[in-house]
Image (cartoon, rainbow, N blue to C red; front, side, top):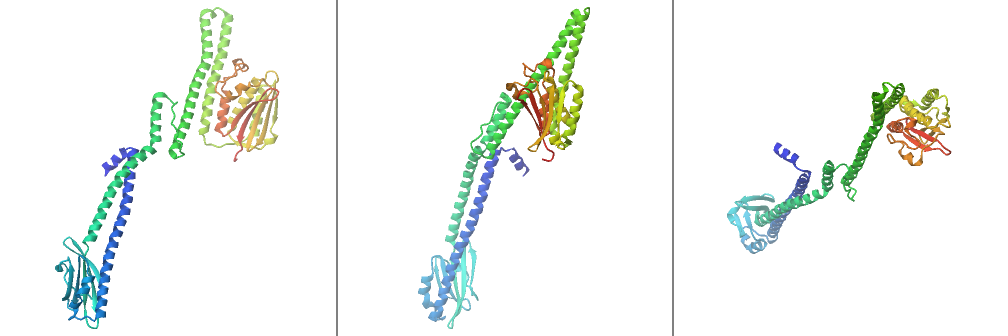
Length: 467
């Protein structure tokens, strides 16, 4: 049994489906034909028994009508012969069980011993290979008391039953073979998408993530599996390409300050030791690039933390207006030359599911961007509203704005609009990427729009707590 179980476990799904289909067909076939076989046998036996009982009843009635006695029993032989049939024996017995009249057609007399009956009965017995039906019925008239005994050879019924059984067994073998072939064809058809999925995975190992599975036209579960697999591969390929792009961008961003520092160190080695001006300039530039390098590394760490936010399950209900007020107040102290306007009246008591520190971090990113690109009109407005079950925190400036072709890309890591947002204005190009991932991790989003008349509107959208 364990070997059979082990062999089945190693068998492919295709052959398992084939065997299961064949086994199920055999079980159904056996059940149906078994019931049919039993019903046919019982029906044939019932017909033979009914015919014998009918003949016994007719003979009994003949005795009553004809007033037959023991002395005249032989006179009814012609009638009994007319009632008798092939492979049948009819005996008339007196009250002592002595045969008075015997009529037989191809049935030996010694196969069944004479026996009287007190009530009508039917039974079966075997004589060698012959199956016999014996019906006995008492005869009680004014002139006669005895028994009519009818014996039927059921050889023909048994032969027909054997033929039916042979046909059923042949049909069972045929059904098993046909169901096996059908199972092979059906499993090949059903498992085609799975085989194609396996081939696609093997191709991916050799050629890369660009391979896809052909989705069948039908809307069955395997077609849905193929579609989901393709969607998963699209996301995986996109993530892989984004990772490659991120590595390339990070390498480029880190290479620039390192190259500058390396150049100034080489300059110091050649001439800076004896030239105070070159020494001062090189040290100043190196310090700036080291600070920038530190900022890039810190932002990369923040981006990693932001990516992990979506895996956290803690819920922190934060009153938005308090955190916004606190953040803007502290930021104003850092930039006293800017005019900050704050309006929280429309969402004073609104709460959202985010830690205050994370809300402050996202808001600081937007405020820092607004300050960087508002060199001429130093006016920044922060406004809160509630709309459609969301709390909106908007940071608006009157700066240089963002070119329309750059708006779809501002959340990409290290992305800058080269013409207007160059490195001279500081930053690493990671701030909005961090903000977007923090917001997504808490079920929110970030929207960036250009304002009519100049400037930018950056909006944080949070779902209200409990909504």
